Image 1 (cartoon, helix red, strand yellow):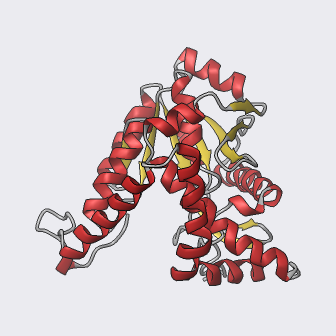
Image 2 (cartoon, helix red, strand yellow):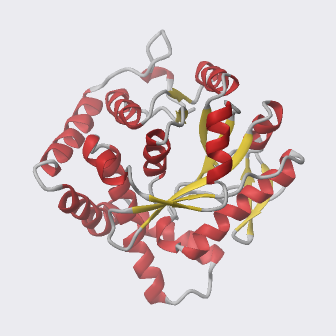
Length: 304
């Protein structure tokens, strides 16, 4: 859960609204409103361009991308590095614009093609009420997968990290709930709600590639990364399927292919989490420009 200093928190524990929060939310709303004046494809393309050539450089994202690439692929040619420094922030901006596009996004992606060896198992779990832990990554736009699953009758719940700006957080939560509800904040009450949804035979969506300070060190893209075992632990405890699911952006920049991989066999949390890491790793290596290379994934990656 995002920490907030005492000076910015109400007695109830909720972040205090300040003028900068209102301004940031107003600026975001204005950009989104202006984008809505354009046809959907043009809007997403414009946001991708802004991410690549304006937001990325101004926000310092290119330096983070370079640092991570230097760690993972130190021999990458400079031309490829520059390409990823543009395309990665561009994909991130596209994903944000898509999530806030509401019905236009849903209509555009709900008939996306689906592949992978896990679809039949997922549909069987839907029909029998067996709980499912869906695991994805900061890749492409996982909200496209949520749309497709909802359209196919999957009762899916998500979890999110509350943002420091409470005004924008409310807008963000509303956008996610419009795509597929319910969504729960990443706090004690939210986790309780998520697990209740799972125990009732629902599906929950988790993200596998977060940096977790208390996580165990597991190899990811050739370097140790602190990784939570919680997805596997929940699946084992609730006798739930553990299924990797991804939304792969297509060459046109606005369409997706949904990949549902075969369920991870139940063994032990470490073995299952290593399999999840390998799944994400294979996807990232195949589509380097769609993973969030700005992520501080390998922070504090040495044994304590």
